[in-house]
Length: 328
Image 1 (cartoon, rainbow, N blue to C red):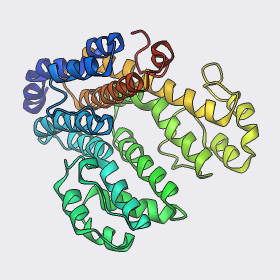
Image 2 (spheres, rainbow, N blue to C red; image 1 turned 90 degrees about the vertical axis):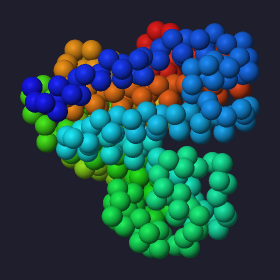
Image 3 (cartoon, rainbow, N blue to C red; image 1 turned 60 degrees about the horizontal axis):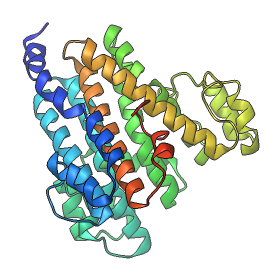
């Protein structure tokens, strides 16, 4: 094991406490009110500002997650593969600010400052400058992963907001897939155990929503032939097509929405299971960096889902079916 990995392994015990958030989610599910849920989050350090505004609470939870990623970022810069993984996840967690700018360009309306994460100085500065066109935005983003993502989206889409946003989402999994395909041995196996179903979910989503055949490097178990069939078929046939896929016994084929929803659930369950196995069963390698980041992302999504459900007074038992935890 190299000196770099010995160093990284020495901080893994500290990072483990940051991704084991099952107890917080369980406590939130037991909260009797929104105020009790927010007090749990403040006690655990997820909220730094006093606010009962659910949108502002969501932004704070995302900022807390980005802070965690930045901490891991400082540890992983000594290794190029780990750095590429962190870069992609950092993009994924901060790209909503880019989407806000894009929506502002299309609508002509200014951005509410409180809605920005403000984690990436480049994006924050651009938001302040209020670009007037997508071309101007690309120029301002030049040299960053955001520019690469936006150019990819503009080259691949019909240039409406929905398709641009879908492709900005897809760019994350495309970049991560490139990193994984460059790995070998147990690193590659561990990463695929985390993200195989997620890669298929993104590929399926793009095929269904944008009628596009995704890049062959992304899909894992879903074949290019099956994805092409989806893009060329009526969506009413999607259930029948998915019955011929490796997910036939796990996906709900009743409607396109049910298929995508159940695939997302499968992807999140598989990701948490695979990430936890990688994190607890391997020395500190780039595969473990990916597992840590995926767990951070899943934790934030689950916590936000629970808080929103409490705010809306939704049934907790129904909510559990959408979390990345199999049992809570």
